[in-house]
Image 1 (tube, rainbow, N blue to C red):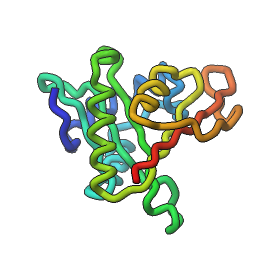
Image 2: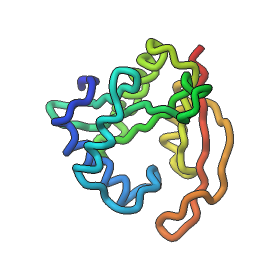
Image 3: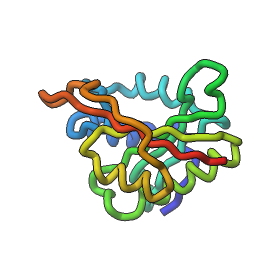
Length: 162
């Protein structure tokens, strides 16, 4: 497995992973599959200050992870939000760990102070992964998303880097 910076050629595989999450998981509150054009716009929001990385397993994209601005207001400049998605056939193989470690290291190097994770309640594997790297429970928003015929709660976890 190689963890590396995502490139535009990775986008179709990343789109497949994300669209699978839309259709099958509460990990995202998007309800309609995205197009390659929509994901291209998303992709170009990343860069040197906001890295997007992939886990490449023998030439196949097994997952991806990125950090984005938490809030556009200036006082939030040192706070980022993390997103991590894994291919359903590559879960439970340590890929999430490798992505998480790499993106946290990059966030530290970039001088960020804290990382925020919003995780739908019930996604215990994601909560455990974040807690393994020091994220702590910071709050819960009740019934903020409606997906699969049910109201979903969102847990907020936070990692202080400095």
